[in-house]
Image (tube, rainbow, N blue to C red):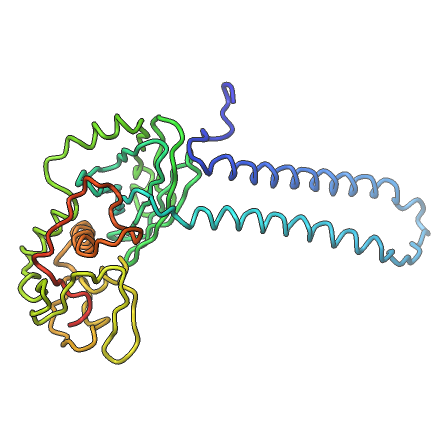
Length: 334
Ligand code: CUA
């Protein structure tokens, strides 16, 4: 790279693959640009009109030539498609052992929450060599989480969760940008990702006073009086939330829904949207009553009531599982 860095650093496992595809696109583009412009100039001179009275002869193009100039570009674009799709699939599917982190974007800052309870603003600390999965939403408009050194960019959309993941390969400090114009201070919606050696990261994690996300969610669950109706043993007026996460929920009026993060979020903010079979729509709407960060804490608490490995549980063993005491927030029933 020398003094003029044409490319960002390659600091994630996917970087090299993305760059190789990019080099390929550049080489193909440059080759055909030169070929086409060279041919234009060559033919312009070679077949120029030589006298005022000259009339061009009609000439049919050879079929072989037409086939060649159709098949070769088709093959090249199919290579680009297949190659790009394979990288896209890889980037879309976080490994099962990914470390989950929640991201909330708002005008004009990034708020990040670790499972262990750390909260950060415009800074993200992660360990090197471990896949990190981001679950992201926005409080207002569309933002885009962009870390060039990781070759990762994902829109952050109000009202829904989007995800992305990456594995940092070398310790360092990497730029974090918002890559979607989101208002006056869009250009100031920036931060840093700190990739740290795993032991340093553990040290960093250790300085957390306020308990894990699930712990805070459990407190919130009581504070909001969710526990009055969602009782652990299912005796409340609303369904128990023990074991709900990851399960398939039957809905009033037929149909089922898989209880994932998006479903739980919707059921907190807008419970009437999907009512659990056999229950009344009595739960109040929490839209406007709780922040996106509160929702994340509640989701993590509810997830902790369903200890099923491999379905998005906090993989880290030091995350205390909240007691299934208050049980029931009510995912959908109303
Ligand atoms: Cu947020 Cu641009």
